Image (cartoon, rainbow, N blue to C red):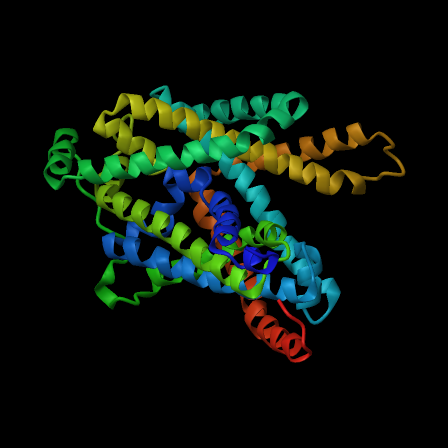
Length: 403
């Protein structure tokens, strides 16, 4: 196979698509929280279909931006977005989106790790318990940021593979065990009632509330664009297209299957949480963990909980490290000469901000903060890809440049 064929092969496309998959399928996805918040709560049909549409939209945006980067010879998002917008300084619009989503992701990971630990210990993640658990996570982060960053980074790939495998097992186990009769009996035992799906299709298939989740979810998942630009290197046009197609299939079907499984469990989980049943006060926060608790697969519950906890902590450490690398050189370098001291200050500030946000809880962060940043991204990231990206691509191609 010659070099040109290799750059456009399905194999290299799969490698690049895996970067997108790895960025998407983190703790937020594996916990099931995002899946319920954006898809499963609207019912099985929405949970099965809308994730495919959301990832399809993101695949189109991804293809536009990767092709634009390739035509210009860019390998990083800063240069790409500086050239995309009418004025280079407008790249700050993407920076704002990117920084907010990273801070939100760290805060969500702190809350998620704290919630996962509390659930595993059999404690309801509310009130003082929430603060204590999140403080424990912060203490772990400080220690890892000082002594274990390299270990966490080195282990992140293996951890990502294991969390994908364990999440797949949870989805299969949840689908097999999702029996309406058992759900009714359990709800009756606790004196609770099954919840109804939110905004189900009384207004038709394109009911606005669930339908807009497609756009918002795709928009805040544009956080995957920077690593995809870096990973795609000098791929050709066909290779870029194949990477986006494979990315859509991998992410879309994983999200769809997880959503369908959780949609089956949603009425029970939300019913138990609404009835304030002890042990289920935060049933929908980490729904995959709650499902395993109800099913009673203790070995899988332990395996999944440990991996999910590690995934959340790993996300925190790697993103904080990214922020340190990004901002320590800008933190008054003429006044604070020590690079190590600047790094500690940036990490400390980031952890303090994220801890404060984490007290909002995982669900509030993923549905509200991610959601608002998603609306922002629709305006400043998604729409620009279409109104400026496509015309500029056509112009570059007319000039004889090849992607």
